[in-house]
Image 1 (cartoon, helix red, strand yellow):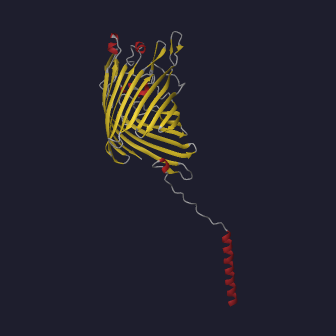
Image 2 (cartoon, one colour; image 1 turned 120 degrees about the vertical axis):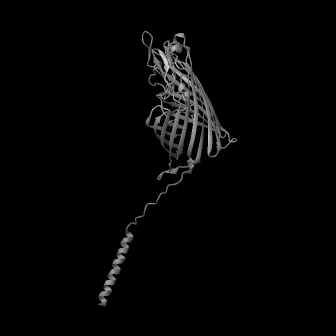
Image 3 (tube, rainbow, N blue to C red; image 1 turned 135 degrees about the vertical axis):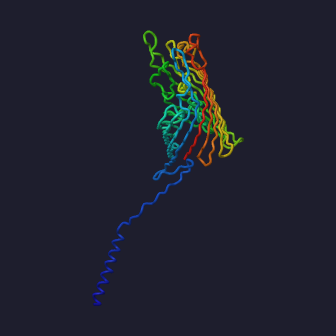
Length: 432
């Protein structure tokens, strides 16, 4: 019995030894190391490294709610050859807007500088006086790539400077000075000490202003924008210029000749000065622009949408050729922080538009082809109870005045001479 017991113990010990040797020969499975999200401080706050690479990403967005009041404006109606005026009861006085915005910013270091990809998508739902069109509207607000001085895609026009930085509303015009997001291809050269120069090729069709008196043809030459800029501790300054093609599908003369193409232009100068002596964050904006055949670069959109019986055209066909329309704009604004959480903006803008004498003579019966002026002045006050959360109100007064070119027989067709409007807006906004 003792012999059998000893044999069993010896056999078990041998099996355990063999099993141990075989187990040692087997590969040991190790769990993959956990790669935690790391903060990427090289590009500012909010960036994180994308796991598995050296690219950094920032995800942000915005939710905005606007509640507006806009004094109703009448509209011209021709009855029996005489212009009469509606009382505005067909127009909305109050309006609502809800806006959702999402943006993604990805940056990667390369031998030629940072490779940046930026995307911003937003959806609005508008009703009433807040917009000329009600309903839900989705838009690709920004989508561009930047690398080695190149900017390609959709972003703010390089011509723009102030770009409605302080004001929310704009009145009769589309904005206080040029403020346009455009498809473009640009190159920026930097020279040190904050100096830079940019050449940008931009979509002309976004900037066209035309009516039945100037039927624009298809885009043959995009707008060419040139910019000189300086950014330093005291603020920024910029000089912009653009060449804008005017061509038309209209024919003229007894043999239906094609109307020759013409080129318009616009120039703009602006300065932004920081005013830390008043309060941290205070800024002053001053900007002026002149345009000949390129009125959208003054911040003019579809003026007729305000139901004031004038239209802004880059040019008018008269005597067989395109007669370009001239205009100018001045804009100023001041931002002041009363406290770190309460700030106020005050701004004003003036725009004048002048048609050529030939254009007006060739369109005596078209009351839209008239010189006009537009003024706007407004102020908003914003309270930020917590970071990136704003509650604010704005009041805006605008006036447009038509400078008639009307002989005696056109007296009854000249319509309303001036129009003014008061607007108010309450805004609640959270950025993240």
